[in-house]
Length: 468
Image 1: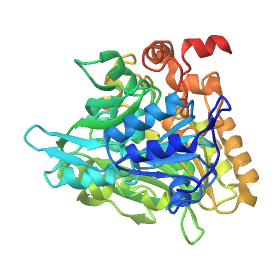
Image 2: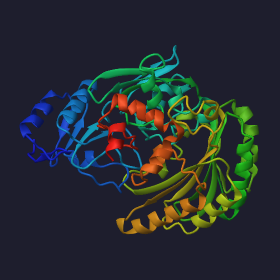
Image 3: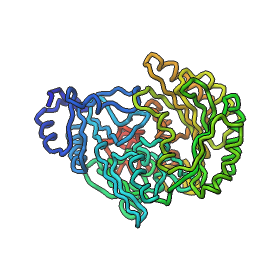
Image 4: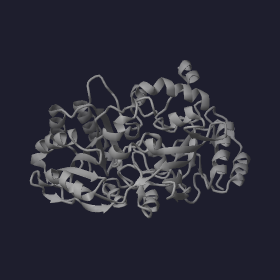
């Protein structure tokens, strides 16, 4: 083990002997700066994030997580928790503290008779889909297969099945959690009910989720894919998309996008997933395929696991990312015109603007039934800026903020917590939790009163709020 000086948040230097004892207690691997594998383990999806933790505990199981939580608490270490996927804010790493890394925890067990699946926190949606699809089953899980199940679900969980089957958090049956005092709890509709409520949208504020049990649905072949249109029809396309979504059946989840093809050509696009009978879907999607006319029509029957990979190419690891996002109640002509005009000035061809349509099963859950409370929002709009060179950061960040200022609702900062960056500020974080914030503070007070789990879109406990 390389030797290095480890300093707690309070400024205490840790004895390396303590670190060695901690390492010996783990079944997994403990990495310090300079160790083989440390550089790869500290890097996250978003290259804007460049942090150097003092320790990375690559956990092999729940016992390792408990040991890491206890070590961090007893030595006043800053804690970041990393699942199996990626997050634009880079909250899976920290400077100087400990990263509790769950990415090696990949257990998945499907119960086809009970239509459920249990998966460990290091699993990605592509990995879960692969196992569930063997039985013709699936559940809502984002729109990029490399996304981790843990972060997406804890933040709410938008996805291409959401209008028919609800958010990822709506399909959770139970979650096993290691809390700040090292206890192992099960949160469900009958156990630790307040914690179960908070975990479904409140993020990683209350403990470390180790396993998730999800409800599965019959999901085999779906009808969907991308349809590309010329960019000079983008305004008309977005107006058509608005009309499409106003009358869409629950089986149809549709996104609209402005993006640039690899050859540099700007296009507008509609992505559709019809999770019902293919023959009915052909009728529902006929207007999408005929509008334009399209430059390319990629809609076809395909396995759900395949359509979940549609956007994988737009989310490569190692690029610099900066996003701005807002929920919208309506998709006004003013906002769509602003999107089109501003996209023409996007400094990077890797940047896109994506509109996601919610509603359906998402909106039939009460705003206070889960910690994710934005149930009446009809759309989520995200400017996802990606670029390659650090020298290009300033102009790309400025462009993203300019677009957001042009389209965000006046007087509302409502936003999906999973799409937030790490510089949004306390008021914006509070807006992400909306009317449920006060109740979330009460749950935080009970399960993490000292705010051990603070490297997240943080809900401060009362004692810390009072101190500031």
